[in-house]
Length: 492
Ligand SMILES: Cc1ncc(COP(=O)(O)O)c(C=O)c1O
Image (cartoon, rainbow, N blue to C red; front, side, top):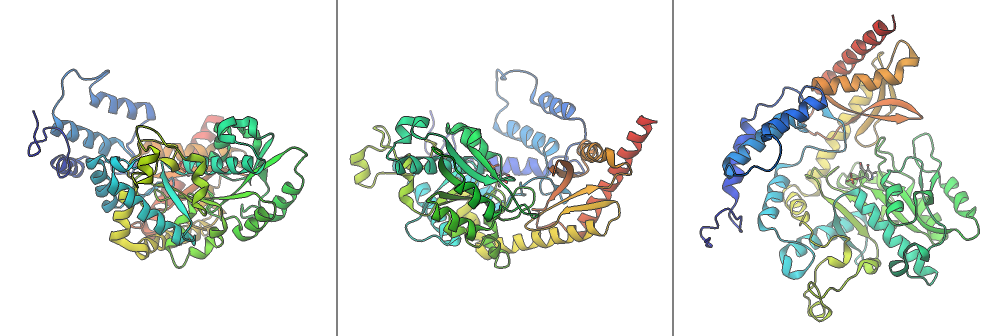
């Protein structure tokens, strides 16, 4: 029915790009809202999308690719979040680089995988090339290795799996075979502000969330080495330390735990050190900021997310390990994929490093980015975002309607709108953010600091300017004043 010259609806190598042109045309023709979000209540916005898709259920007959793509490009453009908008500053979710977006489509076109040689030799080599470059950037030596993952959550899970199996092996036990029974009373140490994926990983791995021991932090939200030392020394009889998880780039504050002293403590106690650098790894691209993650090479494993500082479309998660043999815990030889005799002849892929089997070649877009922009290009993007964050800190500090809660370390700044009645501070700050989201005018984040609701800017758009920040903060003040008035009228 189809031939190599006419692949029909299939996208073989070289085909599928007419549809991409259709998408690009539709995206540029879409009626974007003026702000970064579509206006309306969440229920209205979601219902509008469903209505445009044509009601419930699968369509019986198709529209054809051009019409389908045109429709979806418009729906996503008109009802999605516009991360390239200068007033979009909510999450660790950057506007992606166009070269990476194009390379991602290129990777999809070939539909190669990374698990076995015969599912995609080029993809395997590209992943190795990117991982080797990232490992060298981290300061790891030639024995290191790494793997792409669907994000920081899964990198942290995989790292703790490796740490769990090493801890069990240290007691002559086999956690891969015997599961939790191999590790009585496991303990994982991380700071009080570590990412919640550490807790989830412990639950998934059968260690239980109760295994997490939260270590105290200093005023800048960094783990206190003395507190870790004490917690390790005070382990009860029968408890097994599995890992210390340090954070390089806390989600809200961008602060980095003191990696060198923590590594020294972990080494002395014989415990695996994992550094969750999902956010902070990208500091290594910048000559100015690389020193902030000093000591990262001392970690046994590192989480890095290039869909944060790295400007990649998600997902571009990476797990690096200092000693490549640590991946032994995930090794598999499967008859239909990589039988032993094939492997010894070099017919092998990355199956033995990942929890996934079929796996997208996410490294392709990162390779395209490295080739196009180099380390220095990415470093410049980060320097611009960092500078913008410092400006945001200065503007907030100088504003008598706003209170700075945490200043610029990487690319976030945390603050509050000052409410006349402090008892209403939490409710007003939360509602003013929802008000901005409903209007679609600005996209900002929120978090809690010491139990108090705060607002957060995450500035990952290198094209945004100080004038955009001035506009953004003016919108925050207006939304705050309007919300306060409403609350007071309601109480009157
Ligand atoms: C420090 C840290 N670790 C892990 C994660 C989880 O990453 P992902 O969303 O890619 O799973 C995040 C997400 O923001 C993070 O900030």
